[in-house]
Amino acid sequence: MTQNLPKLPDDRIPAHVAVIMDGNGRWARQRLRPRAFGHQAGVKAARRIVRACHQHGVKALTLFAFSQENWQRPPLEVTLLMRLFVRTLSREINSLHKNGVRIRFIGDHRDFAPELRALMADAAALTEANTGLTLVVAAGYGGQWDIAQAAASLCRDGLPITPQAIESRLAVADLPHPDLLIRTGGEKRLSNFLMWQLAYTELHLVDMLWPDFDESAFSEALAWYAGRERRFGRVPEAS
Ligand code: IPE
Ligand code: IPE
Ligand code: MG
Image 1 (cartoon, rainbow, N blue to C red):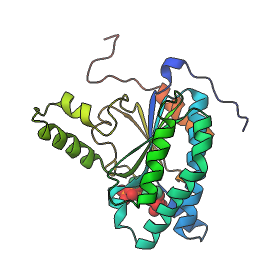
Image 2: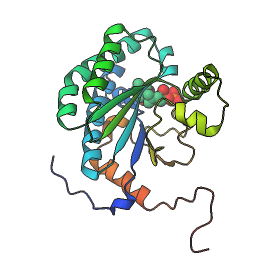
Image 3: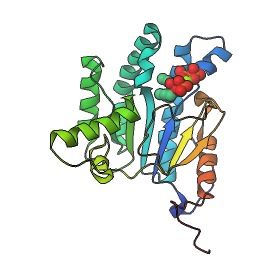
Image 4: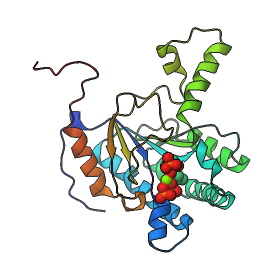
């Protein structure tokens, strides 16, 4: 892939990008194909964006792959999604490792098949010491679950529940919060993604369906982000 990416100043590149990869089903329906066909195309889009993060110097990428609520989809779709998850992980892990990617998984994995859980644990262990892109895959994830499990773990240890303490027990506690959230598929909602961590994230909500999301759409998102003024409740510097 050779593409001329517009060069943005380094301090305007988000350190952490989070993505709600939505629209696979509609993309497939537009082509009169089953939803699973859209999910397969969605994997290709995810691969493109991992590569684009490398090229732009984004340090962490969190992808929403499967929400807790997605368990309520028809059993066949859930089965096919799980199968795709296993296949993708088995196929991609070596090249991710070779490219220095550190992969992690967040979510409630208790209902996942033992085979998939083992694959996730092996992939995380294999790549743990890598220093390239940190790729966080949110699967079986819910933002409310994350906050509740953090609070429960503090209670177990008899510690007071403060924002800082919750922060330290979230599923991923050692990454900065996402600077930029991209949601494809046109919906204007968080769908129980990183409810805590998105408090001050810039939200880039686009109509494009996830399988169509490519390097230039990602560059556009970064350019949009570069133009944002982040105030965190303060007033602009010149005021
Ligand atoms: C997102 O695409 C993928 C997952 C939730 C796993 P959808 O499957 O939600 O696609 P739409 O929103 O129905 O088009
Ligand atoms: C959000 O998409 C979850 C993922 C992309 C994994 P959904 O398609 O599940 O969200 P809703 O149901 O439209 O809110
Ligand atoms: Mg959807």
